[in-house]
Image (cartoon, rainbow, N blue to C red):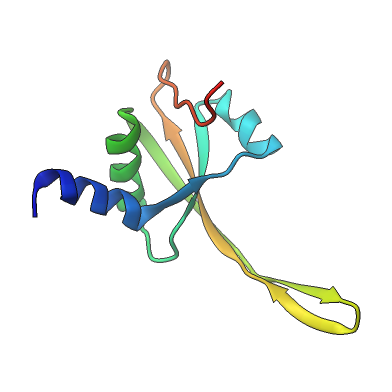
Length: 101
C-alpha cells in the first residue's frame, strides 16, 4: 500500500463529516471545530486525520458520545440513531475552512 493510500485510509477511518451548527460556528471563533466521527475512532486517530487533511496543528481533542433518542411517528415508536462527535482545538492563528464561501 502506498503512503498516499495509507493517509486517506487513516482519514476515512476516523472522520465522517464536519458538523455545521450554530454552536459549532461559535466554537470556530475560539479555534475549535466540530466533526462527526466513526464510533471506533480514538483521540489520536482523529488528531492525525485532521492534521493530515487540513494541514493544521491540533492542540487538543474532546470526544462526546450523543445517545440515541426515542422518536414517535403517530402511534409508532422508534429511535433516532446516536453518533459520536469530536471537538478539535487547533493552534492559535490557524484556520480550517469548513464551508467554501
